[in-house]
Length: 213
Image (cartoon, rainbow, N blue to C red; front, side, top):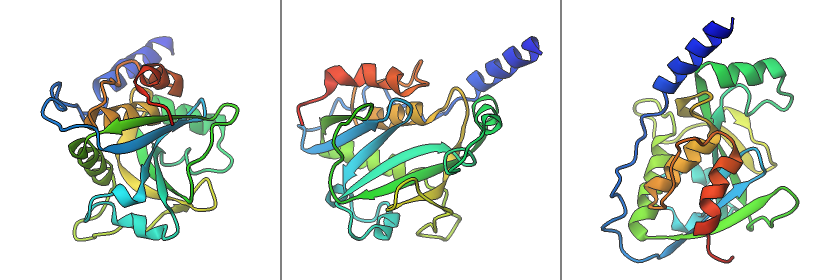
C-alpha cells in the first residue's frame, strides 16, 4: 500500500498544473497602479480585487454580484470545497487523486478586517499585471463553447458568494494555495508555487512583499 501511495504521489507531481509563468513576465511592466489583496484563513488563500478594476469584457460572472465593491476569488476541489459537511474521505480523495475543480467568487461590500486566523495582505501591481491576473482568472472558468457567462453550480460559502465550474484538476501538488501563487506570479509579484501546499507556504513568501493597508 505504501509503494502504491508513493507511486501515486510521483504521478501527481508529474501532472501538476502547466500554468507556468515566464521568468521575466514583469520586466516591461509600468509602475504600480492598482491594488490587490490576498486573504488567508490559515488553510485556504484567495485573491480580492476591486470590482471597478476588472477590465471590460472579462469575468462577466461579476454581474451576479451587483452590490459588491470587491470580489474574492478562490479555487478548489469540486466536491470537497462547496460541501457544507465535507468528510475525511472527501478530503483524502481531493488530495490524493486529481479531481475536477470549482472557482468560488464572493461579492463583498467592503474589505474584510484581519481577525484571529484571518490574515489580509495588500499589494500594488501594474496595469499590465492586473490585466494578466484577471485574464488568468477568467480563463480558469470552465465555459462551454459558445457560452459567454457561466451559471453557478452551488451556493457559496458566504451569503453573497457562488461556485462555478473551473478548469484544472485539484490534487496534493495543485491546491487552492498553489493556484493563488501562480495567479499572483502572473500579476508580476515575485512568488513561486514551488513547495506551496498550505496557505502558510504562500503567506511566508508574501509577507515581505506586502504594503501597509
